[in-house]
Image 1 (cartoon, rainbow, N blue to C red):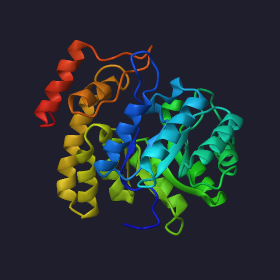
Image 2: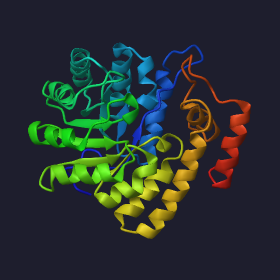
Image 3: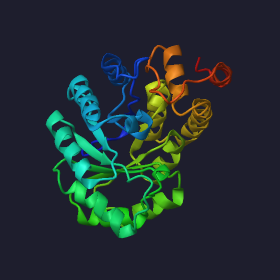
Image 4: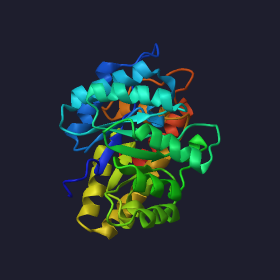
Length: 298
């Protein structure tokens, strides 16, 4: 593995655990991160969309980062996500992430409001220039502002501390175009942003994945990343097919609720959903368990 890579292999998005009262369960959060480290996860991504970070204040997001950094203890890197429409609010959060000892930041596109290409470029560049930490981009099309390959190319050409990219577009042509625009000489850590993309992203030159399935089935993702590193593409193809089926089970029911339900089943508890987000229904539980048993995961 290239020693210059900060994030690579099976890295994990962190799912924020809440109590029944909707309060962050920091003890359980620490246990989750320790579980990921013990299961060979190579890094953690905190305060993402799947982390329910839109339900958190800046102070709460900072406390999540502080907990992750403390528990990681330098064993694996921690990247703190910025989920804001305002550059000023994002920069204020960056300052606090830095004070926590965060290893890097990652910037999610602004939500809802439609930005021009130039406006999006300046959104990312104006945040990135305010820190010396490595900066990653997170392309999350559900925000309504998909980052084009041209913007990514401009940012990596013009902003020195740009280091990597979490791509959740599930678009092979997009990834190929990004790689062409950046070129082979620029340091660039392309990370799949979806468990559905691990194999294809790796075949194009990606170095790993920011996975959700790692939170409950870390071995599944660690094993495919190891298999890919060994160059066993046929076995990796079969593993990716299994991952797609497991991922299908985890999409059943309300947003992220299946992950928290299954976490409790496999001894990796992830707490409760934060209201008004809902838990899985009894009907959905049966569907989830059926698929996971079919795949030998339960």
